Amino acid sequence: MDILQYQKEFLSYLESKKWIHEPKNLYEPIDYILQLGGKRIRPVLTLMVADIFSNNVSKALPAALAVEVFHNFTLVHDDIMDDAPLRRGKATVHEKWNINTGILSGDAMLILAYQYFENYEPVVFQKLAKLFSKTALEVCDGQQLDVDFETRSDVTIPEYINMIRLKTSVLVAAALKMGAIVAETTEENASLIYDFGLNLGLAFQLQDDYLDTFGDPETFGKQVGGDIIENKKTYLYLKALEVANDDEKGKLQYFYKKKLNENSVKISEVRRIFELNDIPLLIKQEIANYTEKAFDTLAKMSIEDVDKQSLKDFGLWLMNRSV
Image (cartoon, rainbow, N blue to C red):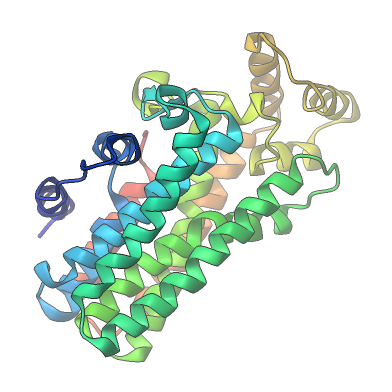
């Protein structure tokens, strides 16, 4: 199966679920965020890995849905924390309803995600729940670090990489490992596929950072320049501080102390400084680095070459995406 087939299989399963029941104000926002689309990367990974290790995609569908529901829960709460107006080109949950609804519906999604593990036998259930709890807490750690970094002026690139590992990579890695757990493959395979996911997740988040500043507004689905508006100290910003001259560095730091009502000048000036210092090229090199590290892990895995190639193709697709 290819990526599109896994997506189709997952969407068919997602659409078979009836999300809306009483009280409607709790469940309609859940249905709304889950129907907003997106690439469904994490559930696709769960299905792909289960298929590779056991030739059984349908068995992994509840675990894949748990991953997707949890991921969307984090988006609902992240958007509240970031005061983001748009998600996938549409109004965010708290904008369409209100903040209280966003908080409560998000809480319900976290609980719903756990419920999908009840489809599995006790041994598999326990492994999934244990991995999921560890991952959920790490995602919270990453989110808190992200918030902390907003008020710090001494964030380093290694600290930033650690933050995105927690906030983004561990969920990609867990999605892969869940497929391995459902397939009941060896501990070594499950561990290696997790490491593959950690590096792939870092490449994915760095690509997201790049697209947030240099993406096409038509395809990106979020507000381009959102990280600059929010003064987020992404890899682009931290690398620029490392390589820019004193004048450019001063301008960057000046802009990143401001919260403005009108941001077009700020966005264009920051982008200009990034471009003058080859930051788009440097981040692309970093994305390629982490993708290669992920591919190196695949080499150690005891699976067919054709399956290694499927996972590689997925990594290359992620690295070259525009959305």
